[in-house]
Length: 145
Image 1 (cartoon, rainbow, N blue to C red):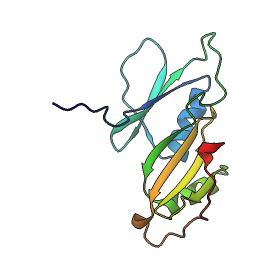
Image 2 (image 1 turned 180 degrees about the horizontal axis):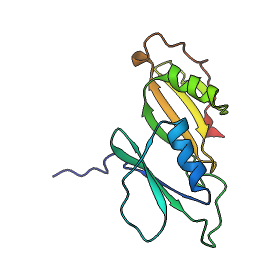
Image 3 (image 1 turned 45 degrees about the horizontal axis):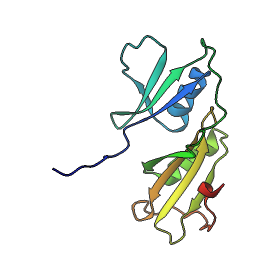
């Protein structure tokens, strides 16, 4: 039998601001807050297409320091759909974001930070985006910063 790591299941954020973090993932990215096991600590699970992809742990009642960003993990990426809709949603919410086309044009991206400074990358296959206007193709890479 072969061996495989598989695909990313979820990522976990430890936050002192659970309410704002849940609001970001619901109102900005469109995830849904859903069922979560009855752990002995507060938190929330955020779902995309029926899968809990973001686990949040509320550390506000602890002495644990809030990390200012993603630490050594630079960003977390989602395979996404609806580039124009997301761009309009971010603009309507007053969110700062960066949109770009990967050199070669097959992939469009949006980068936005959550309330904890975690960089979220949204990837869109250009061929599936229909009549959407392509963002500027840029040779620089957010990952290089």
